[in-house]
Amino acid sequence: MGNSIQGWISQARASGLTDSEIRTQLKASGWQDVQIDAYLGGGTSAASSTVVGVSQQALTTSGDAIGESIFKRAFQATKQAFLQYLAIGVLGAIFAVVVGYACVALLIGSGASVVAYVVGFFVTILVLVFVFLVIQYSAVIIISYKTTSIGQAISLTMKKVIPYSLAGVLAYFVIAGGTYLFFIPGVLMALAFTLLPFVVAYENLSGFAAMKRCYAIAKGHRGQILWALLVLFLVYLGVFVLLFVLLSAITAGAGAVQSDAGNFISGVWLILTLVVLGLFYIFWPLFQTSYIYVLYTDIAACQQIADIQTEHRGKKLMIGYIVVFFLFIIFSFGLTSFLPSNLSSTTDDLQRMSAVSTTYYDILEYTSATNGLYPASLDELLQDPNTYSITQEDADLLTYTTSADGSGFLLCTTLKNPREVMAQTNTVGGGYYSTKQNLKDYCMSELGMVDKNRNKVTSDFGTLD
Image (cartoon, rainbow, N blue to C red):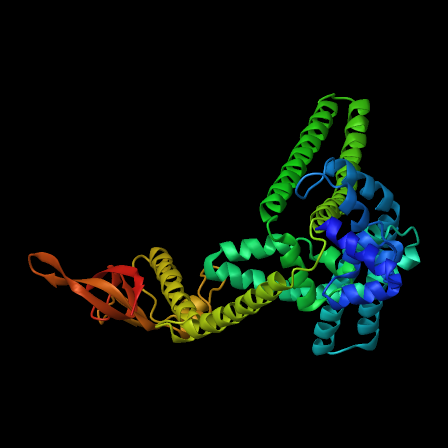
């Protein structure tokens, strides 16, 4: 394929076409700038003029997709981008703190209402999220464009972070819909969208165009992407465990020395542990981004011409998965609405049953303190809040009566959802259990759990009618 394309370019040049005219014809055929650069060289796009990219990888990558020394190349990219990334992170953190402090000071100074405080809180959270997103995506820009200018990196990031965010939201819908459908489609889409940040940054695409491009690039390479990501995770896990064990052992050893010098060494090692772990968590996201960049350049280099048919099929699948996602959401809300016992009524019943149980033990405690007498009403318990746990809210949910001779009591509440129980009828020779029946009134007496007729019951509260 590569030789035939280069042959066509040579013939086009021989016929008198300029590189600009050749580029126009190739783009009309569905090629992307980054693919044209692989054979034509140079370009007018922002990416082609500043990025060291796929054009070099296309001619040097060995194997089917992922080239050699992936970790070495990722580390080199990380090393080149680290200072710029760190500087943008510090500037972003300062900006977020200043904006957050200004919002809080403005609200406090103006004596704003509760609504204004809530709005201010959410605005602050949105600012923090946006700053965090800019910092993270700046790593993609710095690595893609090999820029050493912090100003240029911030400018390019601000231009592309919104298109990337919108594409990311669409990608989430697609992945979720595929996962709800049969799980595997969601995983396959997630593997393809691993390349999304660089497709947006490098190829200047957004929305469905970027997602279709990811789908086409990943065709035939999802297994390699999965394996590469698994290796990356295992390396992360190994490095984290090694750092944690090593630093913890050194800190524990220093702390075992019972002296001022030992305490000092222990404190120094504790600080060192925090610093090393902090640097690791600054370095690792950038390294992970560099690693994905290497995957992208190697895999994209294998596809020198846009696969329109594959992209079209990918778009239809993605739209279908998005439809599945929203149908699932609608079905979930509908199912919740039509359940025999909705969440609110179930929660209310649990509150009522809890009020009966706690008040029951309050009554027993009262009885112990009064030589077997039951309170005449729940007001007697409410008058001593330091001793009894019953509240006025609990009392409003309950009915309480005592027998004429004062030898018993009945404490009940009415349930919104009847509960299945086994009722035991009191007989002269003992008792027997009848068939299951609905218990509408949850009651307790000196006998324990009973129904409203003071027949003992055994609950089976796992079933709702």
